[in-house]
Image (cartoon, rainbow, N blue to C red; front, side, top):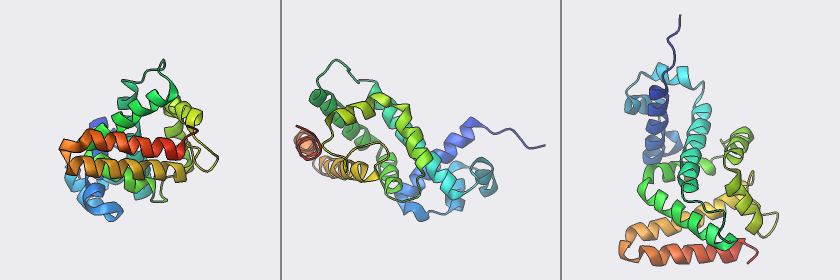
Length: 190
């Protein structure tokens, strides 16, 4: 009889994978991931049938954590630009604190390994965030949701903002404001 799966082990494997991707990229060995999680490599494959399944679960998990954090301060009453600025600021601040998660999520987003089902699942969990995107995005090429092009542009701008904010903490707010302005004027109907 197989042992029941533990949510603590599953989360440890997701966290270990996040760390391994941030440190070694998508080529990180499953043996390294298992070691970081404190489990045998075979245990990893009890929880995730393949490395691609693991990557999809990590991506979904990270997006869920980010979305949950962003929704804590989401104010539906603000105008579109103000809501967008608050979300941008929240994402940048989250990324500056959660460096491994940010790096792993960025690599996974452009990897070609994230399935349409995972993208849809992520899309469906925080409808207010996607609704805000739909209220402000300029054209079909930048419409978010299942569009990795728009997400890649957004995340590239955010990543650049985070890199400079981390490099020059005394100018962090200047970079956050400038990054938002570039994103807002480049991707929205403003």
